[in-house]
Image 1: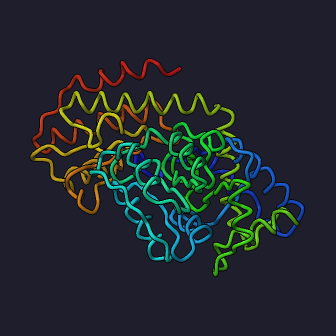
Image 2: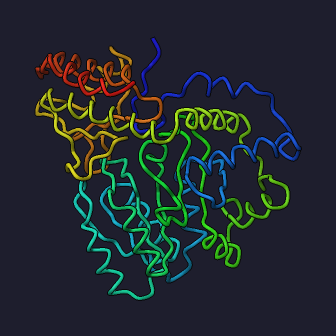
Image 3: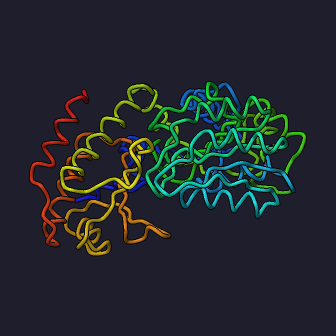
Length: 381
């Protein structure tokens, strides 16, 4: 039996996406490649819901996040960022290490700071260069539900708005242009349901102009070079991961065939089913109700549930992979990825395996929990 990969990334990849990588290798300085790249460019724009430029980096999501910093932040620049988890902490530290000044708006893990705190910070600092936000904090299953208001605020104040959407784009609402997002970064292996290794970045016209006029002292992550090659030849400045490009194109095809609204609705229904089923087992979400993610379900362990033993049973006995917590949350929570091609089968197999593993370690799970989840899943076609 194959593993059911219910991690917060990488996630399950549909067979037609995996099979796309069997296409022959081509010259990345050829007309064949330009056709491929242009098609991916245009389809990525549709998924991002933007008319802005798209750059495809051959990196993990972290490479795309770092790109957003090195191309915008200069020494002494102020950047506001809400910090409420591992990845937002890393991003704030990255801004500081690059010479910027990260103004951290802190909130307890599992919560978001009140929107009003951002207005206060902008009133206190008149020279803020950028507002960064980790839209979905993968470490805690927490989603910012006022991204649109942050975009309006940044626009009013003349600051760049940067969205780290690595674990959420393709699984929840994210209209880049409508939310005034200047730079949006994501990664192929999360809600887009493609193999790891491609990280798309969208860039607004305003941000692009700034980056072209103020290129960073770096080579591989220098977006000015990518813009130049795209405008002159519709190529990449460096050798791309060609098999991954084929897979990514097929993943985009599947997303557009389903339709973004349908895809987002499916993710929400599956998340509701997870939360309902887990709650019926006596398990509680880590994130507060107004901040709970539809793509990463973080769950508190009950007393008597050992992380290593529990997740080991899930993987070894039931071939279901879920993630543990890390940092301060190590051993305290486990995390389920509800993303990509997630559907009834994924939810029900995961929940039934969790219930069985709990019973095996002596923590009784309500046998009715799966029927509670199944009732929520009736809303799916």
